[in-house]
Image (cartoon, rainbow, N blue to C red):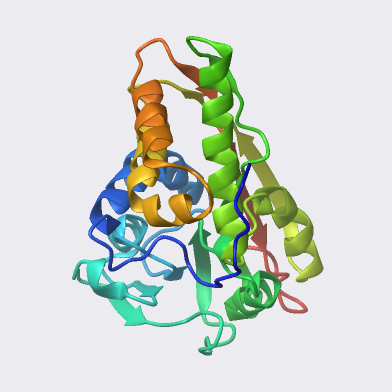
Length: 274
């Protein structure tokens, strides 16, 4: 049973934590290849001006900077941007997308990966991102829906229940921080409500195994979120057991659904699309 959680709005993965570099490494290993493939579909190329919010370790911003060089620009923002590496054409800014302004009609491409699910004001932020696009510019948002991520093969039923309890507790921690762990499924409709068009939805599910990056990220979360998980009712003994379970070569689970969604700001009157 989950303990009663006091609401504590804020990003649950502290970017100044001793665990933050491993968080960034796991995210990059698990999701960069698919993110880059989707971004390439936008046609991003030399001379584009791009924005990434919540850049974290900066791997997506670095990839974009290489694509738009030498005369394009990538602006990478984060509330704690010190992990974003220096690179020609890449500007790292300390920026809170909820409270700080963004220039209007300024970017050819805006990217937000696994950010808005953590932000209670996500709809207002989405409107702000849409307004920051040039007419014809593209927005790419990637978010999870964790309502589906069942265990498939475990040593016994007790192990399956333990894994489900861990995932449910992690979702409760996110909700207590103002997050929506099911936000991925709501992104397409939210983009349409923000006035964007040509909405292209790509859901993706993967198999979690002991050697898969997505499951290693879950193991990492047992450490990164340990204090919050304990406050929510898990014990260190349960965390030790679920770590061992996820490292079992025979363990199999379905991943949560990752929604990669692209949309476009309508071109100005008399203009064609990009």
